[in-house]
Image (cartoon, rainbow, N blue to C red):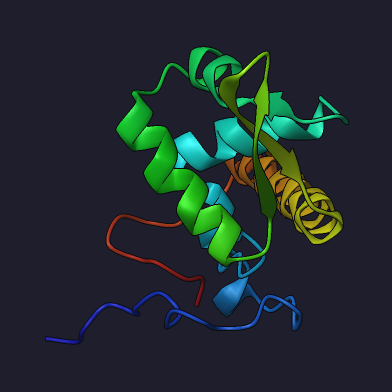
Length: 137
C-alpha cells in the first residue's frame, strides 16, 4: 500500500509558493504566536508609552507569575523592554515594546493575514483534496 504524501517538514520555506509548502507559514514567529504573548504584544503596540505591569496583567487576564514568565521570554528575544523604578515611593514596573518588537509584530501580522487569505481561498475551493490526500497529485 502506498504511503500518503506527508506535509512539508518544519522549516520548509514559504517563498517558493509551490503547492507542496504553501501552508508552511515560517513567518508565524513562535515567540509572538503563543496566545498570552500575542496578547501582551498587541497591548503594548497600542500603547506607545508602554504599560504598567498591573495594567498589562489586567488587559491580558494573566497572573503575576504568568505575565512575568512571558515577559522574560519577550525581553530575552529583544521584543520588549522592562523598566523598574519608583513613583511616590512605591515600586513600579513599566513594559514597552522595542523598535525590533514592533517590526517583528508587524511582520507577524502580515503572515497571519496571509494565513487567513489562504485558508479562506482553500475553504472556497470547489475541488477539495480527496480523503487521505495531503497534497494535490
